[in-house]
Image (tube, rainbow, N blue to C red):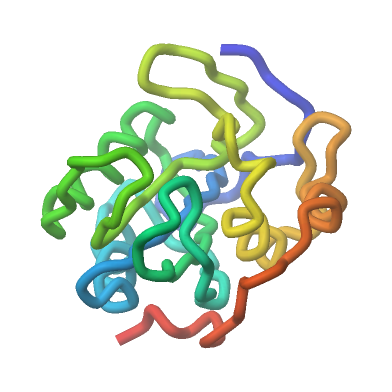
Length: 184
């Protein structure tokens, strides 16, 4: 693992007695009731003793990307504190997807829920099955819009996310609900 220049991530943790790292997750879905499924995913993660949801972006309606012949998506981002290593955080996200009946049958296809680890502290990881920062996030406005809402100062190396988003544009992305959408 190599470190990359981003921002300070170690904090006094809301996880008692543990050092934590701030990580950012991307959430999405477009079949079933994605709003309810993503909200449940956040509650599952927040209930984990090694993960605390610190902040959640507004909820956005976004056009499909990759395979465009499918329903629009709902997307959001979440900032979490975690005492887990990056691969274990990813494993918890994948376990949560499975618990919520995510079916992986077609890349970029319809899904009930999708949880991606976008950034994990200031780590850069390039290993089989885990790349951090997420390798395609800088090219996807549906990821950057909610992420920039949470952390407008965030940068990957010398590239500020808000500047990259300005280059990509926000066409077709509509804010549909404020940041409390996920709370019961």
